[in-house]
Length: 267
Image (cartoon, rainbow, N blue to C red; front, side):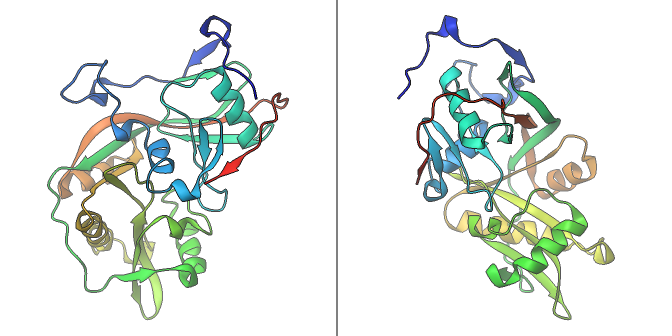
């Protein structure tokens, strides 16, 4: 097993983004990190720990569940080596909400501004037309996602939490569900509506219904979207979500040549 190198021997880093002043609401930058500052890591060490594939302090979901990998709050050179090994040589590593620094040897392949919004009094409520979706519905869910592009959705993403849909004449026309679950919080994700029925308020109804289920188990809803998606941001704010912080949607390609070959553990 390798040992962690002294800090003065870690690789050179280059910035890809910084937290804004919303990172520590009500506190100073020295405050303890908020669970939503590193939501994938909090999820994979908490409610979704049974999914976790682990190498050292680095975790990931199975590749057919979610593409996200997760670093600890302050990754060092050893963590980046473990991330490269876990992702695979030359593979792309998506990092949920990571706004730190990327080591030399890594290639940033995707990096856009995003926002994180949290429940600030939304009128969560069940919906009589919403039905629970499961494995049997995955082909239709994947088709709806392919046509509407709400974000990543894979064959086993449905296992991350509750997914609700609305059907008309038997066809799935809208859905929303749960993704990351850091302590005390659940992310609402995969919100999408068939273009033929947009404007009927189906997405709003499903967001409120999913939020109701989250609150029923004592957790708080949150969500992410691209900073440029102003229509979605206006909708979420009108429902009672508020901006907590800006963030980044980032992916980086691992180096082709890896060193230490420690095993990957699952769970």
